[in-house]
Length: 259
Figure (spheres, rainbow, N blue to C red):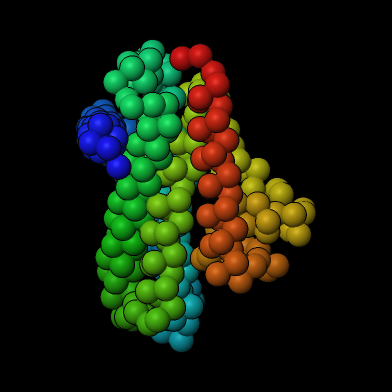
């Protein structure tokens, strides 16, 4: 490879690293990251406490309740996707997206950096949600003279929660690139995440299990919400495929539209 090509490649790599660093700084600034995380934890904790205290015979059903407590940590996925959407649409709203494109090695680098940072934030949301579920579950079980069950299934669910949160961040960011309008993106994600998916999964389970939410339930092994869910490995593959397809769509739309 000629020296000019080597230097060009190194320069592009360095510029992309700076782009990622800038996105990390942008993600850390403002109230979106901590605000959405605290809201996610509040919803999860309420559900976890309700699950524990609603169980009539906690000692006899400790394993099942423990798994439900960990499963409820997945409520952070909605808020991870909201953060991803805000990370993108906030720039369109302020008009700073043009400056990001100007200093980036290309529009693809802008999309890639935002998706990467949204994924890292998703992992962070998932990890904190899992740790909170463990702390809340342990305290609630102890108050009921029982012990939170930490078996293989519990840790499998913990890993699944972190995994789906990691994909939820880029999913929201890709939706942000496709929609651009902050209000539309946020309302759309909230309405679908709270009502839309339940209606589709309830009324059309054979269709719903092939949608991203159905794939997410498959990864979590949630047969209670979706009895016809795919097996976890197939659900993960389907969820990754959905995210990759939406990311590709976001990149193409961003490359063709004016900023």
